[in-house]
Image 1 (tube, rainbow, N blue to C red):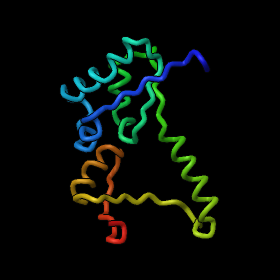
Image 2: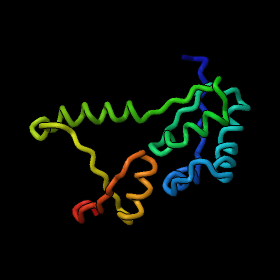
Image 3: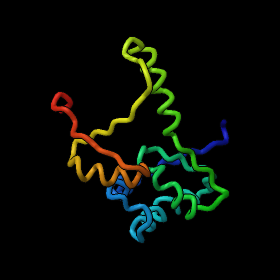
Image 4: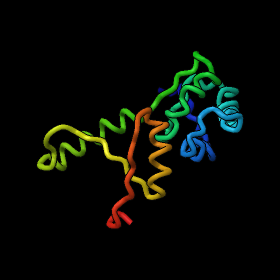
Length: 133
């Protein structure tokens, strides 16, 4: 679409806020205001949440930018593509029901606490195996 203008905006600090499970503080609100205000001032009508962390902030972003701005969460599309790739490249390893497992390269207890808050149910995160280091 020739009339579409794409504006990129880095958002330093938002990932760290989500990883602290800080989804509503004054500081997070200031960051979101700082990052969205210039986009809205330029006439943006759609914001693409281009990071896996940002959907956790979507309710706050929605509240701050208003209902007339479209928010696009890319997570579902990325998950569908990952599923297609796994099915195409590793079909012999797929069997039975899927289970969710959570891994961290950091502190497993801290990650479990924060992931449980974000996920909305109890999560037990495990440290990544050394083979991933």
